[in-house]
Length: 198
Image 1 (cartoon, one colour):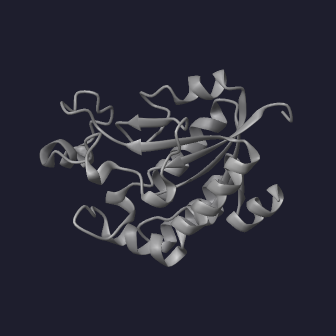
Image 2 (image 1 turned 60 degrees about the horizontal axis):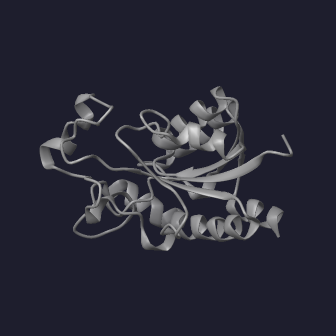
């Protein structure tokens, strides 16, 4: 697959999920993101990926105003329509400034955990000749693991960047990285990845 493109897919790095402040929805996740330096690690990989000419794709949880396009109908997701939260274009649904998309970098909105369900992501990657995806995001055991499983089953090579990810608890993250992610691809660190592109 050496002739296929690599894409960096950034998953759910959003204000409500990653930052302190009035829009914060998940304090334990925000705390883990800060402790692990996730945003800084993601920014370093993003810079290197752009310099290397990789396709960069941003994915976010962002609902239409009616919430009809919400694909996940589990009760756990009911809080979003009930609170009219994470609507596309709202401050809480925006991608954090440190990782803001540049002009020409696609942003994929999803209505569930898995970034491939109900979105054009897989079709777009195929159209762009991508054979390898590098994944980072929050939470590790939700969107990142879902993306790794789906991408692997779709025939893509998968690399997950450990320290670009965090979950609500350290043990959730570590279990996923040590036991689940290796079933679907390889696991690396931001420093290792950036060093390989230098």
